[in-house]
Length: 106
Picture 1 (tube, helix red, strand yellow):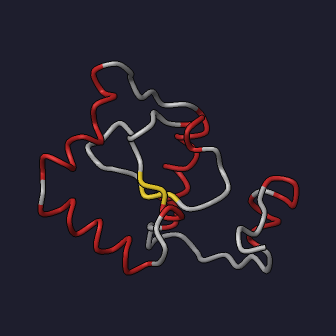
Picture 2: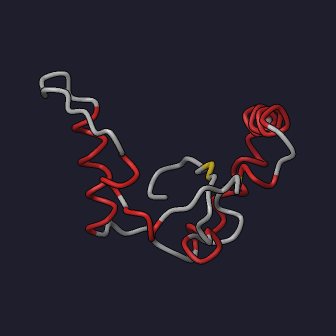
């Protein structure tokens, strides 16, 4: 949210509770991946429409939290070629446990 990009989200979170309305694109609001892709290409061709996703920057400020920093650190480690690879047989269980996530297709 701190950078000039629009998050494309997909999942069971209440994004309206986590981010200002109109600041993200919920992939589940499109009937299929093709429709989403066409919309994203449309935004790429129309900078004025893309800019509307940043209305909130005049009213809110994105701040780093320990949770955000942890995800940045995870990303850095996942992309560090100097680190030894690790294998987890159940990433879901390792990362969040059964109580936090659910299968959105069920």
